Image (spheres, rainbow, N blue to C red):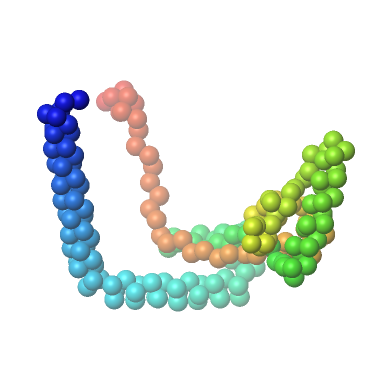
Amino acid sequence: MNAEQYNQVNALLSDYSTLSAALEAAEAEIKTVQLAAAKDLLPKHAAAKIALADLETTLRKIADKHYSSLFPDDKREHKTPFGGIKYRKSTALEVADEEKSILKIKLACQQELARESEGHPPRFTESQLIRAREDLNLEALGELDDPTLAMFSITRVQKDTFKVDPFSMKTDKPKKPGKLQEAA
């Protein structure tokens, strides 16, 4: 590469850097304009969020009170022409004593390593179930069966979550272009 070619590379890099800075400035200006435009809408937004939360709380109380009539035969969802309400199942792990569970996991992992020396792969390892700062890895523990969790003083707790669906229009899908031509 000669001096002229090297200067050309520098000139192109200068142009590129200048345009990048201009783009960043334009994006910052766009954000400023967007924030200024949205500023007047913030009170409406906050009021709507609070009103929705209040309505959801009221709907949850009514759904809990009239559960058997709104959700008969183990039904988990109730739809109306104006929207719907439903319960969804979720699970979480409850740890009675985290330190005790960590000690039990460490002991069980040593036993799993002994199984490995007998030619059996370990079902779990300490690095899977205990994080470096010695927090329980609830995601990995969640995959274990309940009797194994009980060994570590951990129980799986079933919970219901509640959701309100706003009204939505149900429409048919349009025909494919080829079928429209055939019908014409």
